[in-house]
Image 1 (cartoon, rainbow, N blue to C red):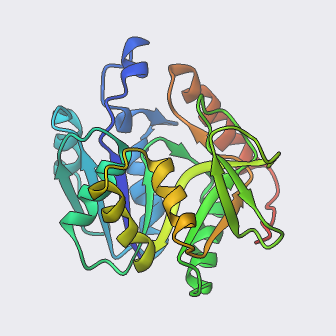
Image 2: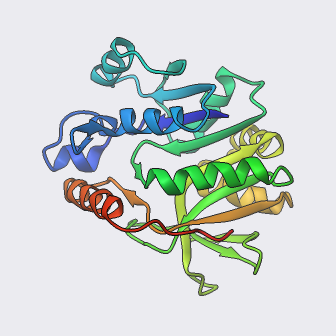
Length: 244
């Protein structure tokens, strides 16, 4: 499995609240977000990890280049106007990737659920994509995900017009047909990740939802404590199954 991390955001909200390092360098229980993701991916059969950072992230670049990881890590340094454009640049760096698991740097989830997610994607080869969703809403602008009874995604909406319990979790497993839509979307002027996701449905690709119990986004300083509590609580509670 190939993995990619979008770590090109400026973290402006965190900066305004006093955290001056790039967002990927936020620490949870002493471990940086970016290092945690790399470690989790390494445990899930990572062949390679692509990471895009912005041109102002000198501290992050230094950290990544000076550390040794268990799998090959390739850094693309480029400032982009959106996460979709960052995704596009990642794919431009390696145009032959047959399938990819992509996440933004600030998604916090349990390793157990992520392992189940990757296993489900590997086992369901008929899918063009498997999207992480959650019923836990802490995003300021959530993307609501509508599914049928088989959890196949039928719509992505900015408002909960379909009374769905799910919102996007910011983790995407995609195969070749879906990856090709990234270039089509950007080259046709699409400028947001959620609009790319809508294109997947418009193109009648088979995209399924995978429910996570909880995914926490780190957008504000207060979210750090929320994420640490979530991880501590998850470690101390019994395992649970996710049905897909």
